[in-house]
Amino acid sequence: MKDRIIISVSTINGTRHFNVSKLFKRNAVIAMWAMLFGLIITAAVIDYLLRTVDKSQHQRTALTEQAASLRAEIDALNDSKQQLELELSAKQDEMLLVTSRVGEIELALGLEQQYPQNLENRLDTASVNSAARQAMLQLVPNGSPLEFRRRSSRFGVREHPIIGKQQHHKGVDLSASRGTPIYAPADGVVEIVRPNKQGYGNLLKIRHAFGFSTLYAHLDSFKVKSGHFVHKGELIATSGNTGLSTAPHLHYEVHFLDRALNPQSFMDWDATNFDLVFEKERSIKWDSLVSMLETKASTQLQLSLHKDAQLTAVSD
Image 1 (cartoon, helix red, strand yellow):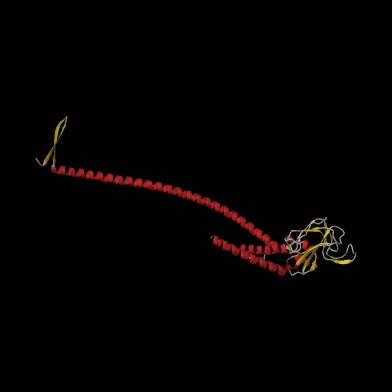
Image 2 (cartoon, one colour; image 1 turned 180 degrees about the horizontal axis):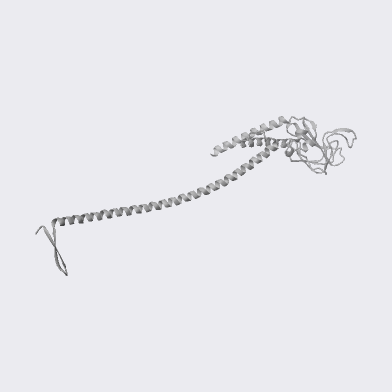
């Protein structure tokens, strides 16, 4: 009886008795432990899966935030790209405008087919030639020295209005009211300031660069003194009616190496018709003067570029 277990089950129909052996009992205990172990394993797996899902959710949230950040960066880069494209388009338009203007300058200077297509070289060339022209117009007499009503007498042989003899007229007579301002046609130094009541009357002479000089006669008053340096456009005197003169006017002469030239050629000369004086006054070696000024301008440009490069290197 020790090896058997009796289980009694009572119902309304009566009592029933079941015999359970010891082996069955042991198997039941093993099954219960197996079930408990299975429950523990299941709980551990469920916990692991829950942790994995939670971790995945966190990773998913992080990836979502990273994706949003990347999309924001992509949007910013697209905006930057559009801005750069607009700036590039604007720069290209500016470059086309610069190229067009350089072409216009080259055309005006007569350089459009003489130099390479590299824009930097073209700019340097245009700058040199432009600087040379500017220097010539600053240093060699050009333009009218005063506002006049009419040219009463030309350069060349004429009958003197007072003496009545045929004489070579070394300048031009420009009719103007007494006191009309007279301005220097180029940079120079005042060589002569001579008050006089005879001949040329009150006279002023300016010595300019490269062998040029200008003379002004029949003046009313002087605004500079002998030895003064004057700039182009500076007030030097006023027109009058002194000396052998029949009416208020300015007698104006232009000399090269003390040889009288036709002042009208220089009065008509300016930046808009730069080649005019070369055609009118062929006795002057203009090519050597232009070459010298272009060389000087090129040297100054190279020195300026070298200085800018040094300043840039120091600032970096």
